[in-house]
Amino acid sequence: MNYEDPRLQDALASEYALGTLHGRARRRLETLAAENARLHGRIVAWQERLMPLNDELMPVVPPATVWHAIEQKLGLMAARPRSGAPGSPRLWRALAAGFALLSLVLGLLLLDEPPEPVTPEYMSIMTDAEGTPLWLLQMDEDTRIMRARVLATLQPGAGRSYEAWMLPADGSAPISMGVLPESGTGESLLAAEKFAALARASGLAVSLEPEGGSPTGQPTGPVLYSAPLVPG
Amino acid sequence: MDSLESRKQKLNGRLAELLSRCANGDTAAFRALYDAASPQLFASLLRILRRRDLAEDALQDVLISVWRNADSYRSDKGQPMTWMTSIARYRALDIVRRQHRERNVEQHSDDAQAIADISGGPFAKTESAAAVRKLEDCMDDLSREQSTSIRLAYLDGYTHGEIATRLRAPLGTAKSWIRRGLQALKDCLER
Image 1 (cartoon, rainbow over the protein chains, first blue to last red):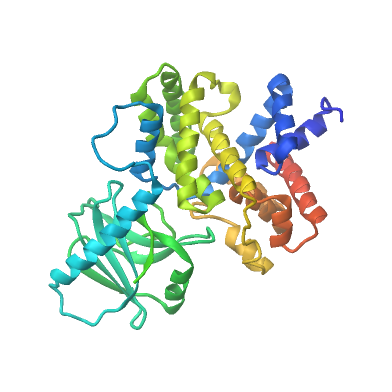
Image 2 (image 1 turned 45 degrees about the vertical axis):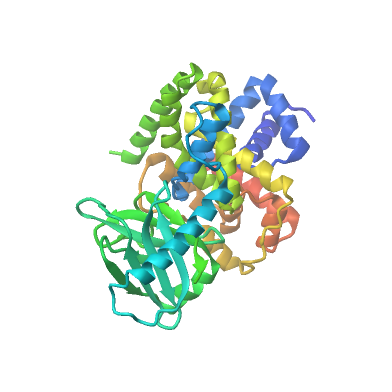
């Protein structure tokens, strides 16, 4: 192949930037581009051209454990005085599960609401990046009611609301679960198809929206928190 | 006023400065860079890898690579966000290919549904910016098969074969949707 042919160069650069060049073909192009400034320039031009496609993805704030693990691996800071490896996703998940149990127990002990026979089909503990529980969310199949109990002091700011979203496991657009209470307990009725979609959700997330919730039906503000959804 | 566009320019300017400070071992700059860039990189990793644990591990690797290679970053490698996004995307592609991941590409076997699922994301229509709008307009000019194939490859990290399966087309057809789609996209952007 004549790699100096501009049309061939451009075609290879475009597939490289798109991500459809694999294995040896990709490595070969990377080697060539390291020595061929024109080819390198074409690749960068294609990467810039396609870059706006990323605006279709909603930014997601990673959990604090990621930064802690980076700090440890690079030795940027003295080891933190706490037991357990903060970088381990398994530990993080175990913590979330621990919080879930703890909050259930707390919920039973602190029943300040009329004792309804709630048998949640799903539940989730929304925590902040440090693992502090913020909301206990329970979804009851019979009534299709999502009940949100606030577990911390929350301040969304004036004219702002917290809105909950279900994240479909297939990566399609988030589905609104309604605005969350900032204190006490709130309830919302989920449409039957939304409730059914919970079975295919990978988790829940909370974004900061204008007061009363997103005007577009899709998250417009930053995603602040996310948590797994567990069978109740 | 194109606020998203100017915000992006500002972000890239700031990231370039942070990268050069990282190259000198400034860890505070690295933390600021992490805060500014990681939500977008994490979104890209999550979309391709579809597993939080893998995406979190990959994000660590990507940021460590950015820190270690900060001294090799130059503007001819693209805008800082483009450079970092490329590191993240290739990292994610390496992981999925190595795993021989069996993506459930048949899950949405209905073509119309598959196309509806991917055309336009959360921010696609809500914010306006010259570059975004221009690319969006040019994507709209492509056939639906072409634009869907390009989105599946770029955002989801699908291979030619996976795209063919999902859109129920022969492999050669999927390849030509992509090849012709990319060419038409470039022609449109240069008009």
